[in-house]
Image (cartoon, rainbow, N blue to C red; front, top):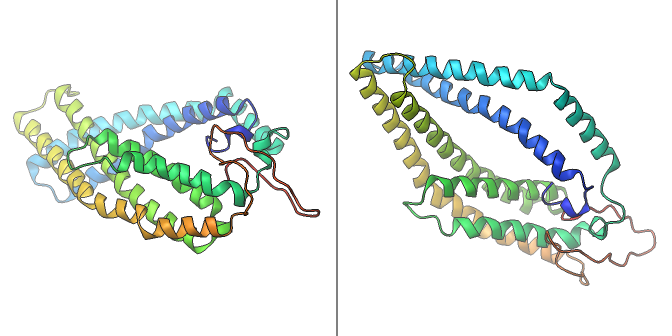
Length: 281
């Protein structure tokens, strides 16, 4: 919706906000599912003291998940979701704004600049990430990489193999960064439990909580060590091949760069040539 915003109806930002509301409820349950699954794996091989700590953590996370899921279920049964669903149906049926010049730009003309714009957003963050960069920087890069991946997957039917190959590199980068963020969220949850336990816990249990946090930190460090290779895959030959493919079949007389924030002139169309256009992609 960000990429297509110039061609979309005025209510699009409101719908995007509502989708964000639903996504946050789903994400809260999903994060707890990930943590519980990981701790369940560790508990199977843990020693007694560590297992006691794991039991404390599991009890807290189970309670949090129950509450998060209750909020999600309430949302799924709410009038707010009914309104969102009906609004989205009308939104999709009506399509882009007919009077928007951006809605009439051919995809072969628009896509190269839009994808390149997304790529620049990725490298603007990624090129500055170093060994000691904060977790927030990696999380921000994950979000940018995800958006670029969606753009590339959208154009894959047009550009074929170069787009598919590049999307796979973006997925690999996104997976590493996503796993790193899961570790960061888990460490924060363990810290909260240690500082404000649901019940009186013993010193060995507190110590075991620290050991668990260290295990997550080790996992996060391993993800960071894999990051440079995954990032170079995204900025290397696969990107250049996709960019070359897009430029090679781009119309020779394109008008203005089709990047968000700029209006595009409607191109000349030969008689009988179909126009199925949306701003951006």
